[in-house]
Length: 166
Image (cartoon, rainbow, N blue to C red; front, side, top):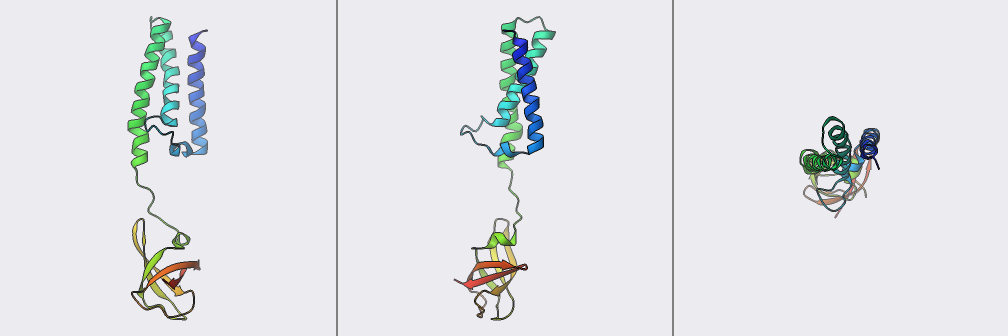
């Protein structure tokens, strides 16, 4: 079998996969195979480099087919390592977004910082991933909740947290 067909197939498949990743986003960046260095991005990158390097080595050098194949494999492994070090590992270590939605606070515990009257609004402080957030709160059971009380968020309506004492 002619190695050119394999090299062209790897190169074309890698480009096709890159276009698909551009269209569907970075969904494959979250895939975990179990071995940190073996990642879909590094594997596809290595296959693409294998195809391109194989074509260049076989067509533009005087290397034999076996030497071109070996050179393409070595370059594919090197590119896979560089992709892992330069792209995959830093993206795994990157911080997640610190933003949140008020609806994400349902079920969270907090502390009343401004007394919540039975028919009115006060304020609660809740610990989130990005730190503390103070939010407007009302009593879910329409009872007064004094400052310093521990509460749980039951519902969120119109940017107001409805809480109950814990």
